[in-house]
Amino acid sequence: MAIGKWIGLGVAIATPLIGGFAGGILTKKEIKGWYRRIKKPTWTPPNAVFPLAWTFLYISQGLASWLVWIRRDSKAVQLPLALYAVQLAMNFCWTPIFFTAHRPAAAAVESAATLGVAAAATVAMSKVAPASQILPLMVPYLGWMAFATALAGKIALDNPKAHLIDSSPAEEEKDEKKAN
Image (cartoon, rainbow, N blue to C red):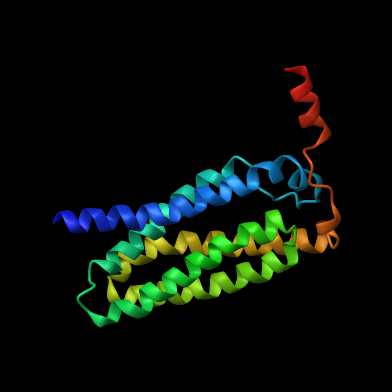
């Protein structure tokens, strides 16, 4: 494989990972404060699951985008890569909406829209690169996005005034810092 393809693969995988990492930085304080205080459904995964799941999903969708990008000599890659870029940008917007602005209802709507664009990207990508390669990489992301949309929607229903909930670190966190 030519060096350019390796660089392309690195960029394709690094881009979603860097965006996800930046989102993780934004959420760190909120996980210990606001997120701990809001009502969450019993089917909410443990906090440790989210970075693991997103790392896998960002790598897999980055790989899927690369499988399309390596066919860049064809004009057919323009639409799937544009849809992919749009859904990735939308994905990155979810974190500040939910965790920084404390707006789970808006985040649920944004997540549903992201899911729609991601599904369109998946279909378009499957028309350029073999579906047998794209679908195993993108369908887990679509499933997780559907789950995340439902989770954000349920949190929004259970916390209609989420934006008013205190976002300072929980008392338990403050007590731990004092003890150390």
